[in-house]
Image (cartoon, rainbow, N blue to C red; front, side, top):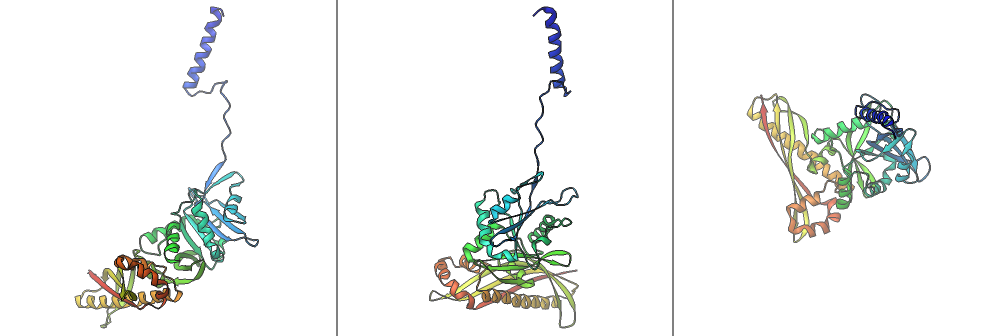
Length: 358
């Protein structure tokens, strides 16, 4: 190559190099690969009976972003894994299930709970800390609509449960532990109240069977007996006609089994309640209100324990909590518990400590 030819070539190469460093597009750039298909991060799954016998139906939804509507999918198959696969690649979206936070079981699909739990624990993509819910009194499709951000609403319910102002959420891990330990579990139940989705009851599963529900105060007391934090208001009226509101929170429960000659004879439950009293200025009236709180809470807890005994299901781990206080008798307690629990005498004592708020 002659010196005359080398100089233009050097200038060309220098120009190309400077153009690439400065970000300018050059005519000899390599073609770029096509953009990958966008991915939908699913945050909620809903399981319901499929249209055909022995099939599973599935709804999946993302959370709405930047004011947009959630993206929804529907699948079906002979198993949960098949139904999930049916939604994997729909149109221009690739569906990702690695960040599912909430799983909802249709009331009619309750017999599939063990299959549902089995799949999620065997599938490495699914977190065992995902929250488990049951939908009652409505079809699953009512939750997965274009104008309802289900993930956001469930997130609010979960946060309220963590704050102790509503029923606590239940993770898959804790649900499985409940079955392994007690043969029973209480799953937060969702229902429509007008146009609002609420959670004010617990679905009681004994083994694979949905045997009933704990409603209202019984559901809240079940959370309290399980050791969860609870905050609530109690309206009271004194003998002199004074009306007041006691703002209460749980101070802990202690479960103590009583054995005679190594036989389980009684179960004692001690519950501490703390709080404040509004609209009361007299110390004597405050003591009277404490007594009312103790009486009302005692009666309510007794009804909740009787309901669990009626179902023959220790879904709040009374056996295990009692074993912590009597570890030397754990073997005897466990061996007798299933037979003794439905008719075991239970004594409840509530101690309220309230302060006046002026």
